[in-house]
Amino acid sequence: MNNKILLGNKIAFYRKKLKMTQSEFIEKVNQVAGISFRNATLSSWENGQSSPTSDLLPVIAQILETSVTYLFTPGEGNDLANPTDTSNTEEPGLFDAAKAKTELYRKLFEDNPKEAFTNLLQEYEALVNVNERLKEEKQKLEGKLSASSDFLTQLINMKGN
Image (cartoon, rainbow, N blue to C red):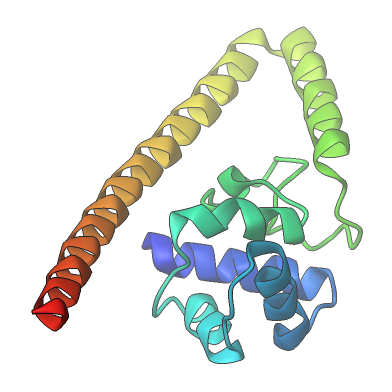
């Protein structure tokens, strides 16, 4: 699954879980980020046609009461904070989820230390991969920003002549 689709699915999942309409969600994003998006923008994110810029991800995660990492992590079946698990209708806060996960690993270490280590290693590798993808996206965005800035400077200089 590509990152745009995964991210879009997660945004839609958390938004619906919080019983927020697209309008309510985009209004919160606009308010927190100080910009003006339309519902169509959110729709294109949720459909995987486009994705929010990396600087918006922390804002979106905050509004959706999750972490940026979970927005890019496919479901893992036994993960208590698994965003694709709809059996629990009340999403725990990040602190509660971390606490529950710690207890899960504590018990797993007691019962099967090798499996616990393997699970932690896989989780770490997933976080490293997400971090690398975010770094790549940041570099791309910085390149686009630099090119846009150069173009605007040229336009301003042409207008001044």
